[in-house]
Length: 153
Image 1 (tube, rainbow, N blue to C red):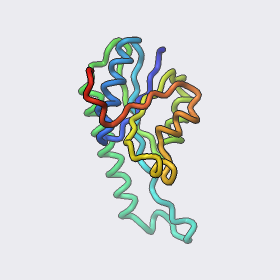
Image 2: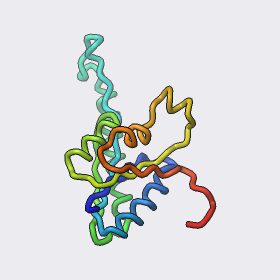
Image 3: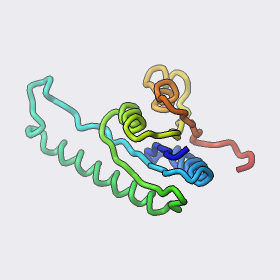
Image 4: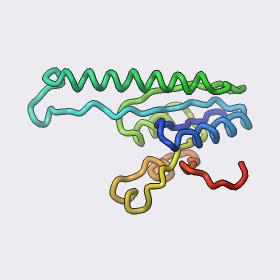
């Protein structure tokens, strides 16, 4: 195992994902890449508008991207790089699609994602990035629960 991709969204699932990712990447001396996906800027072209007609939305999107990059950089800097190293990448689009694309284009060996535990109904209605990765990724995907049980570490 040479390359591990860990998805972080800065939610309550992130600490567990980071902990698992560091343990596994250290054990295998693998390169760890943290990915954070920013939702794409809304498109109003179906209504006959252009992005230039909504400058505030474009400015908001740019600020969201800058903040995400800053937070990701802070997380990367806070981690011990280990033998394989740690890097971060910001992607823009559907989280599932961006992660699948990164896996395919970067020869990733393992994906680590967090589960928010919203339940079966929410997953059915809203979909789940973790569930999508388990079903569609061509490499193993480890799903880390947001609130692990209190038994041993």
